[in-house]
Image (tube, rainbow, N blue to C red):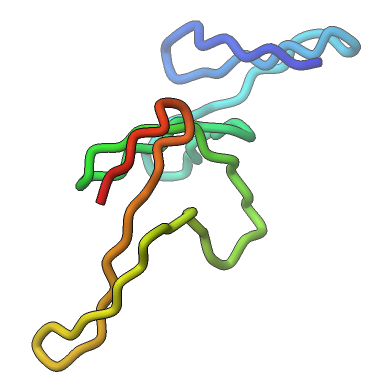
Length: 94
């Protein structure tokens, strides 16, 4: 099992209880990569929903559970509108 600690100064400490402790650089500066967990909080704006999402680095696309899908046209182009259900509160949002 791994535990993640952020001691500051641009490092992420990864503690693997079987092998000791490992340090890795993080950040958005040139040459650095952002470190994500398997599940992260995601914010959709609009409609202002925040929920947990599974991160899949091998996925070419992403998906949402869309309900009440309605097709319509805007400026001659096809669009859809739909509702989302917040997975924790059950609140419906469009």
